[in-house]
Image: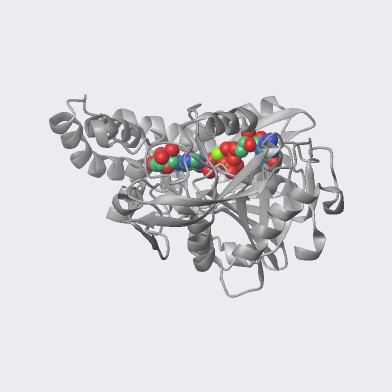
Length: 428
Ligand code: GDP
Ligand code: IMO
Ligand code: MG
């Protein structure tokens, strides 16, 4: 088995969808192993745009099986909508091409309502969640009152579990948030019908992903980015899953002890959607220009993404715990028009340079980044197809990143299209 793991190293939206699609040319199985439809992965192939949220980005290749792993939280209503949209764009969706682990946690209606009510109630301290019910669904999984994909096949099992969960949920919804309670009968009927529709795609409970992938080429597709990790990210302004690359064995049910190509996605600058600390955020003209040039508006919620320069302090923190074997550097073309490019190299806090990345939000809010400036290349690089042909300033930027992160850049993305990529095969 060959294994490639692709994860974002910042606050998401590094261009994972594009890179995963690119790499699936030589892959048999693509697995999503954490997160849910809070993710939005955009892929452009032959000028057609595909927005994926729950379905792995392998789905655009005919010969690839897309697997939704146990670590994912899955909204069946949204999944079916996404399947229909892809079918409408002539992408074949069949049980041979899309498989769902029976252990995958299901997002139900009440998770979405709780997510929204909780955010509303937070007033000034909102996290800025996507409102997709991600946190509440993961909470139920950990509290052992969750409903899993395999439960949806049997209406009586589903009813028992929904009824048990609603005991708590309805009390919370009515008494704390002033919402209407959910009816166990109605909810069971709705999700049993969705379960029936998804039944061909949900594997039976004896399925072993480890056995299935023996002898196959597998790609693990991360969602979000490492700085949004529930343990290692900028808590509490994070998502509710482990987004660091080391989570893939748990979220898929596969052994971690095999040779893997562990690719860290680094956007050539930094973005963040939602609230939370962001030391290199630029609220002035540069940030605005990055947003415009990079089309930085959320794939899932349409919100404008906050933008700023690349942050080597944050990246070094994530790289130290990730063991990446190479980097895919994305959206380099977005810097085309900048005369000067800034790189945050250290942080100051309390009048002195601090060592390391303070991963606690309150501490991170107090730092001021120190920058190093490099010359830009001031030309369009999106038509270039070989590393040697890149302007010398772009090569300097790339080698600076390689040197600082002690990891080679194997892929350089210079536009959203599949072909707008330079692959340095020697590093893959
Ligand atoms: P993901 O969540 O990491 O998959 O990233 P998103 O798809 O949410 O956001 C990345 C956006 O940038 C999408 O609109 C992509 O089409 C686009 N994109 C990806 N790579 C590049 C690139 O190298 N250059 C430019 N200009 N756009 C890119
Ligand atoms: P992809 O896979 C960017 C952010 C939300 C919010 C926080 C918590 O496209 O990179 P949640 O709904 O997960 O409870 O929200 O996490 N967030 C993302 N930001 N890209 C994503 O996914 C994200 N998924 C969640 O904006 O700040
Ligand atoms: Mg995204």
